[in-house]
Image (cartoon, rainbow, N blue to C red; front, side, top):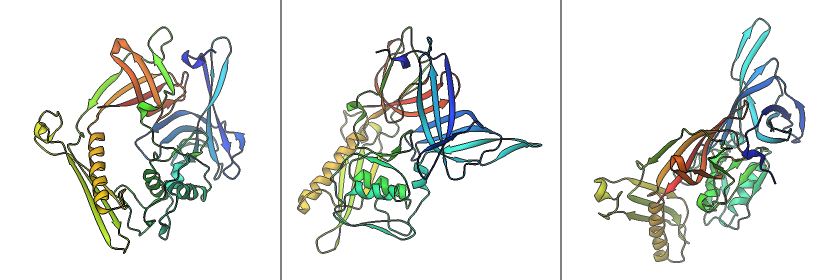
Length: 371
């Protein structure tokens, strides 16, 4: 079977479609929207945003905008893919007599969870399934959730929302903060949305262990430009990890378990001895560590600290490149084979910026953890 995406396109057409918020049906074309770009970033909570130009009147109420790309190759073969489904916002416009243009900002549907909060504390009871609760939070505001199965249940009561004491140092009072906290407990990735606007809850899998969504290699049909940036960042590599668990015993008394791990090995490149100073990574959880006795729970906290220290001792290799558009998105794994530039291996896609012109030029930042 011919993989057309390995070849460069001869023509690209982008279309914008109105999507009913109430039913999810596509209602009409939006010819007043043109060009622009789509940005995807794995390190921010709203993974995808976009900007397009509006020429003429644009008013679709509370409905959504879906962006399509139709790619055509030599010989007439064509394929159409969805690039994203967004909430439109027009912050300003330029006016000349009766003619006006504006930049329309588009936000992925996670924005709806980020901007919504519970007015009163929302309680998740001990024994509740964390992922099922997270699904209900999103579904209750009209979002469609696709979630991996999970049988994880919370080990103590947790409270979210405005005025609630947040459950760990990384949780805020938004509904998205609540969802991501519950997903983290269950061993899931943070929530993301797909191109159709569905919300995805997926179990975390190390990028090294995931099959590559796409591959690129140098050669006659090479899709990437030869100029790349290859950097390795060691500034945040820790030599000290602290894990704090705050929980209750059977009598309702507050108990704190602190796990700690150090790298004091003089033969280690990043140890306190080699660097001469301490770099600490700390984590706080409002939950009990695994174990049936106090000794087992403390041992688990210490083990968890050692694991997190090891995780934080991975140097981050970043490769930035420009290529023609390809069928993969952030969080996906990408195989690169560029022996001339000494860049080869499996990388995770961290950032993309798609320009909606011929060939769909795409700037990509790839990430690889080097242990």
